[in-house]
Length: 280
Image 1 (cartoon, rainbow, N blue to C red):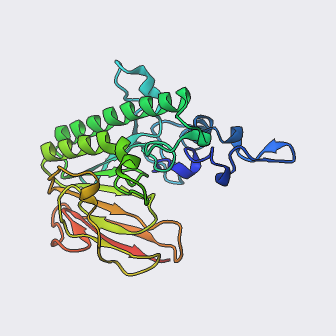
Image 2 (cartoon, one colour):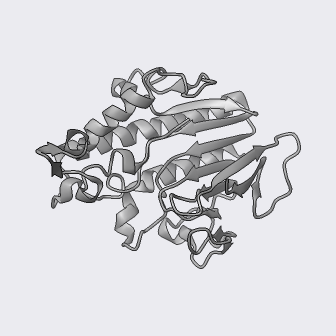
């Protein structure tokens, strides 16, 4: 199961990523790094069979391309948004990238966003919010024990900039917060983007937080509270993990689920989930 991130489409316009760069008379990036074209290419490569995952043991999932709201037919293009149930947990992916889209970086370094960028973000954001709402409605209907949301963007990471840099994520955070409270059971968000492992609840002020201060370091108590970047929330049945990024030593996160005998609360557990960082 895969949800697209900024590096493979939303960042492609940047010259540092190959956008608007030529070599031998040809553009380096596909379609000169046009984000919309590159997202279309990702859909062709990775989501050509809606409702089926990749891999040798392909599994069935529900794609927004198959289960879109008929009142919003444009949502059918978001084949990358999927949900499935496993171990009495509902998983949902939403295409929310960091980098140059929802956190207000403008394509090709222009002064203001083009009509194409504004339209892409508006259509995708609306579809994403409807997909999240559908996922929580399904979770309530099926009486699952927990929900896992997977995105690429770290919606709380200022990246050294002002709060305006992440303001466009507020509708997602508000929606997740309200739906999580209404659900009343554990909701785990897993994201990447900021390249440093972090485990916290940014929807509760002063919640326990662990993070690695630099790549490969042991996680220690955080020196900052991401709640301050989107304040006014108090959602105790929420937790967020930022997975370690593309820095050495490489690692992956192994997550276990036990809905029958949930693990004791601790620095590496939440609700029915427990996890460990693994360096292959």
